Length: 168
Picture 1 (tube, one colour):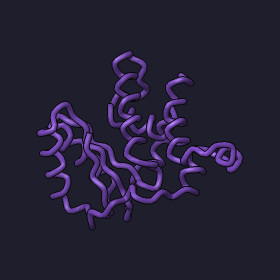
Picture 2 (picture 1 turned 120 degrees about the vertical axis):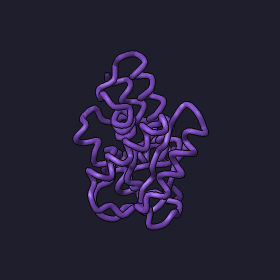
Picture 3 (picture 1 turned 30 degrees about the horizontal axis):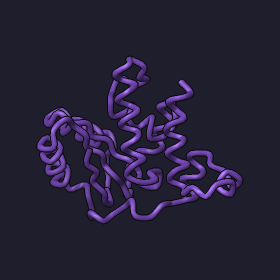
């Protein structure tokens, strides 16, 4: 699993998503873009990949596409339309793009092609800081829940991802 972080500028979301799919197909990898405000940390995405792969292996997946199944787990939701809020759209976004395949060389080739797209305005780190208010709102984490534990916010988000597996 590799993550590409930076600021994206997207003029046509349909064309952008199609391009991500084409790059994934060419290199035999899954490519999914996330609005980084909704990503707690690298582990958040890694757990979503693990749970999505498990669901696919068991035939319990909701989405036909692996990238969408990963998005569902990352969002902690079974409704695709609500999970899509976690993705990117037209305009400028601080984003993180997942590239996941069976071989590091395939991931590296896809990453190289992604960086050459021109959609990345810059390649700064987007996962260094959390947007706590956005994460709490999106994952329905209350002030009372945060006060009841000394766990970091990222751990509470990870819990939401894991709970989706239990709720099925």
